[in-house]
Length: 63
Image 1 (tube, rainbow, N blue to C red):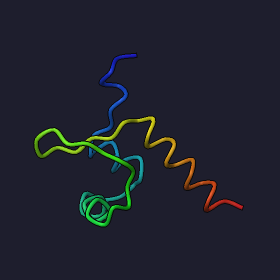
Image 2 (spheres, rainbow, N blue to C red):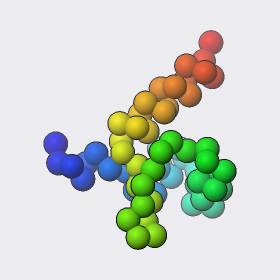
Image 3 (spheres, helix red, strand yellow):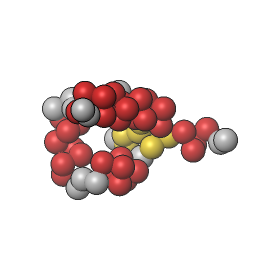
Image 4 (spheres, rainbow, N blue to C red):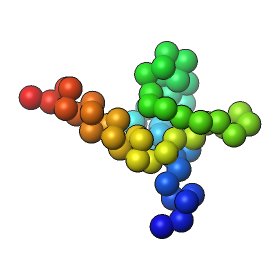
């Protein structure tokens, strides 16, 4: 698997979370998202970090 396939963009995160850009920006400002990194002004996430974060949210919210 190519390294780029392991990286999620802002647009990818919007699709995963099913939220608007404005909501995603709000979550970023309030530190409600998993660890991310920046290249210039662009924000990226490691896919494995996001998947682990989502699993953790499921455990907290489930049952």
